[in-house]
Image (tube, rainbow, N blue to C red; front, side, top):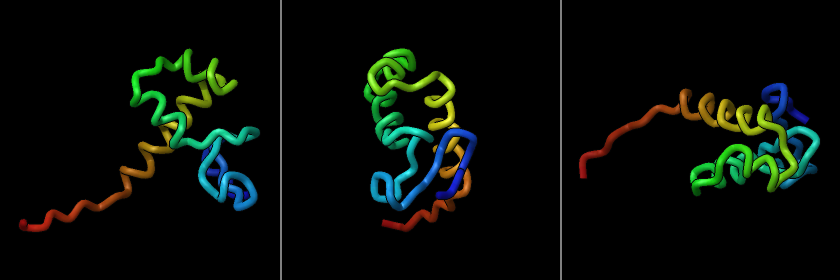
Length: 76
C-alpha cells in the first residue's frame, strides 16, 4: 500500500489500485466527480461517510497530480 497523503492511499487489493480515501473503498475520482457534479462538501461527506478533511485531501491529491503534467499543444 502506498500512502500518498495522510488520507489518500493506493493498494492493488482495493478498488483495483485506484487512489482511495484511507480506510474506505471510496475512490478519489468519485469524490471529485461528485463535487464537479454540483454536490457540496457536506453532501459528499454524508453520501460516502467521509470527513471534510477527506474531501479536501482528494482535491489536494488531484492538484498535485495535475501540477506535474506537461501539456504539449499539437497543431491541428
